[in-house]
Length: 391
Ligand SMILES: Nc1ncnc2c1ncn2[C@@H]1O[C@H](COP(=O)(O)OP(=O)(O)O)[C@@H](O)[C@H]1O
Ligand SMILES: [Mg+2]
Image (cartoon, rainbow, N blue to C red):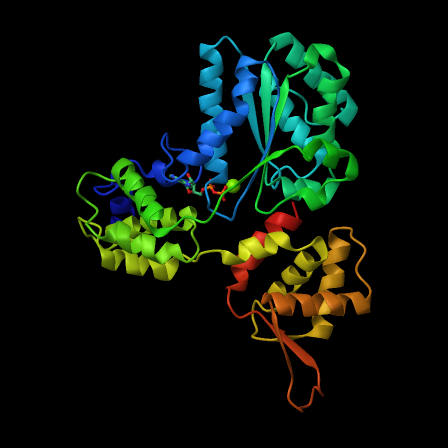
């Protein structure tokens, strides 16, 4: 009992731990000043010339895409306010809102929190959106984050519909801007009609963060989230060094939070490099996430099937994998691939390094191909893939 009570006591280390959560968006974003500037220049005509704009932001995991867009939308809304241009924004994460109607729904609930979550077709919802825009006389910036998930699943009709709304109704001219956010370029996912609209789209590419910027990002969070002087010199350097390989700010911030938690658990009154080393052993950069993201749905199902089979054993056979894969397909109402294609995909995943295959030795099983997953705890894959596929 004593330890549980101790753990509930106010922290002597964290001043405000919520600052280390992924939703928190700091006012200043070190290392992204130029990108915010580019966005501002692109969107200037929205404020002063009542025009609309489209932009595409690409970059790897943890490169600050979501944070930058969120911060930029706040800045844009404020600037609009100062210039009598009413600007509002909605941020939709398409990974969580998988269908077109769910994306539209979250846009409509921005205007009407009680909007029913079923019963309206997509064209009806677009009409309702138009009414809101006219009534409020506002300019709406729609951010479609992780838009590749939506495009892969449903094509680009919805994205196209947003641009058409304004072309068809003169009253709505210049009333919707779009910011698409994706890890990779999305041009190949757009159909021809949208492509012509998006050919002119302004692309801003975010690179990986280098060590200096990662250190600045970590220093900023130390300042905001910890009591003064609690985090020792050198911790942010060490974290920056550990995260540099991935250039991922999310990983760096997670390491910082974990360092603080380890220090707390160990009853230390300061956070030092040794706590960070302990933290590193626990926090895994999810480099796979980026790769998994690129997989098509059958490859993802296959990976989930393999992960499930490997939960309690080191290897499974391709035959077992194919059966598990088929069962999963049935569960999510997808037609499974035929045997030849299944093999083809499996080889590609091997080449990707997601799974590894080897021929079994001459034993009782005969000469079959065995599969394993080497580099990630399968529980992590299961959690991630179930979230992506089964919801
Ligand atoms: N330049 C930055 N300054 C401060 N924090 C940042 C910066 N870039 C990213 N972060 C933080 O790192 C985490 C991951 O960033 P995020 O915007 O979610 O990356 P992405 O969307 O590219 O995967 C978030 O907690 C975010 O607030
Ligand atoms: Mg993001």
